[in-house]
View 1 (cartoon, rainbow, N blue to C red):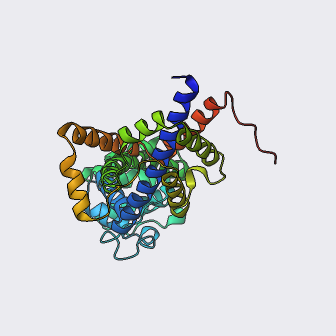
View 2: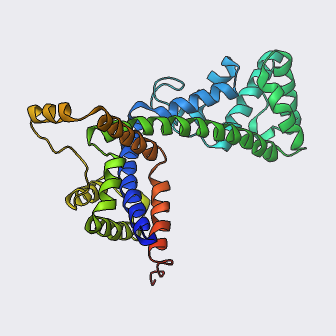
View 3: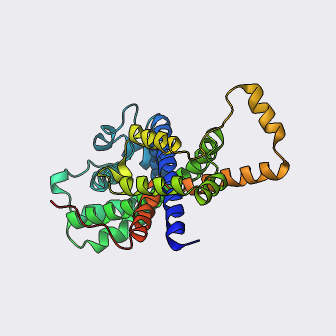
Length: 308
């Protein structure tokens, strides 16, 4: 088998994986939007950051944050993102008001607020058992006498926590993508083993898919292709003869075909579906980038840049 043949097989597989991954990613994102998954992860991150329930409730009900909620702040659907500087300002207001409540004195006006006031408020909160005071003190001390610098430090602390939340979300999304990929692979019979076998033994199909892969890699939409465009490409792939879907239509024919398969054939089929699911879990952008690299390799060099 020549290197060109291997490259064409790889392009065909990368094309199939890219199209199926993009379709499955759209389904996962749609489900995440419907269920408010990003918002639930944001809430979990805020609760992990603000372990004091009283502080958390006052922060999410602060006017700067409450306007970001569709419903009652802290309940039902949560926003997908809260800006760091907005969070920092809301947290400062809540901590200062809590310290004033502890002292039994009115809080200073925001225009007159200095780092000394913030430092004193954080110390009072810490002394009363609020862990947020312990977290805020070094951030305020690093700012010196500049309130803006203290706000930037708190915003950076918040953004670092949200980076961890983003990692949690991506891990959950990847797991969901793998399960959706397995379901799509079984439902539409996207069997990697069968697809590879056809690409090896059918030169016409192999070259046609390699050419289609080069066209998709060079398209302007690229990894941001719409669902309609992806479905259109999948239909074209199927029309070229790629073994996607089941050959039987009637339930009786499908049952007869199922009984005719040996145990080894079913193990290979299951193995092919699992490989497809694992490939889908890597996501459409990964396969689009790999598709570009493989197309360049097949063409023995990068494609010339388009004229602007």
